Amino acid sequence: MKKNQTVIVTGASQGIGAAIVQAFLDRGYNVVATSRSVSKAGFAPSANLALVDGDIGQAATAEKVAQTAVAKFGSINHVVNNAGIFSAKPFTEYTAGEFRNLVSTNLEGFIFITQLAVKQMLSQGIGGSVTTITASLATNPIAGLPASISMITKGGLNAITVSLASEYAKSSIRFNAVAPGVVDTPLHKSNPKDFLKTLSPMGAISDSKDVADAVVYLTEARHVTGEVLHVDGGAHSGRW
Ligand SMILES: NC(=O)c1ccc[n+]([C@@H]2O[C@H](COP(=O)([O-])OP(=O)(O)OC[C@H]3O[C@@H](n4cnc5c(N)ncnc54)[C@H](OP(=O)(O)O)[C@@H]3O)[C@@H](O)[C@H]2O)c1
Image 1 (cartoon, rainbow, N blue to C red):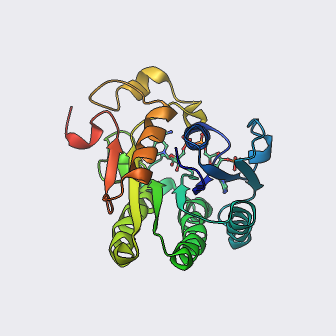
Image 2 (cartoon, rainbow, N blue to C red; image 1 turned 90 degrees about the horizontal axis):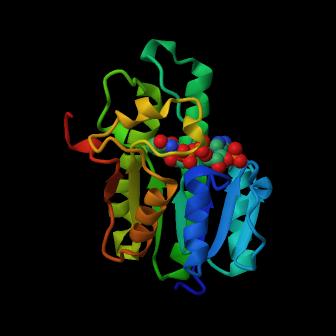
């Protein structure tokens, strides 16, 4: 149990983010949960939970989230950058607007809140962690499932995770990523399960809890930094 530790979770209203919020509440953390509509997500009210609505690609939302964490709980100890959008299509069919949306949510959504959290962690002087949800597809593309422009963002997040792990190691602020394969969330509501099962050697679809368990592990793994942990049924380990 982690009394008096505060974790910010983005993209918290459903799917993987909602499971991450619940996992940290169950372990006694204070949680600041944010997404555009998180206040309507149906979380049971709790003294350990603060909800902030807003688009995480906007700097003003990140400000509000960081201020809420400090005002309500007195610290920011951990961040989980989970908010993300995904679209799969041939490279030539992506529009400029789709690219900008991907950059806004997946990259600016990481940068703004992580900058504020790192500044706060540095002022607290006791380290912390940042865990980011990327994607197995970023380094292990699957023929028949093209997602190149989406993967610019996820590959970029893997890269900045390693850079920041190096930059802040001496301040004991750790940076890790979880790279899921296919996870059963509303993101896949229009994709047939029989097809999704073919996308990993284990022939199975992960639950949000499988990803949340990996996030909790990395958040508490005090000597693990710069790591990308695949939760993908073996999809990163080669052809099947
Ligand atoms: N499901 C998979 O198979 C899979 C595989 C690999 C990686 N991932 C990654 O895992 C993460 C979570 O995915 P998921 O499957 O749980 O997705 P999801 O069910 O679509 O949920 C996405 C979450 O992000 C929030 N969100 C979206 N755009 C936002 C924005 N502009 N500002 C703030 N919040 C925003 C949504 O809430 P609001 O609508 O309330 O804003 C929602 O809570 C994403 O980064 C995704 O890329 C998922």
